[in-house]
Length: 85
Image (cartoon, rainbow, N blue to C red):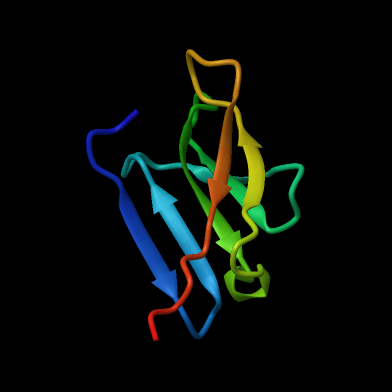
C-alpha cells in the first residue's frame, strides 16, 4: 500500500474519493452500491470512491470489502465523527 494517500471530498456532488496511487486506472463495481474500486491495468486496487456519503448515518459505519494485492481481503469501515457543539 502507498506511503501517502490522496482524499477528495466534493460536498456538492456528495462524493468522496481516496487514492493510494496516481497510476492510471478505471472504476470497478463492488458488492456495495455506493462504493467503487479504482483498479490499474493489472487489476490492483489503487483507490476507492463513495457516492452519496451524506446518506450514511452518524455512528454507523459504511462497510465494504476491497480485495487488496497480497491480502485475501480488507474491510473498509468508515465512521462519521459527531459534530462538535
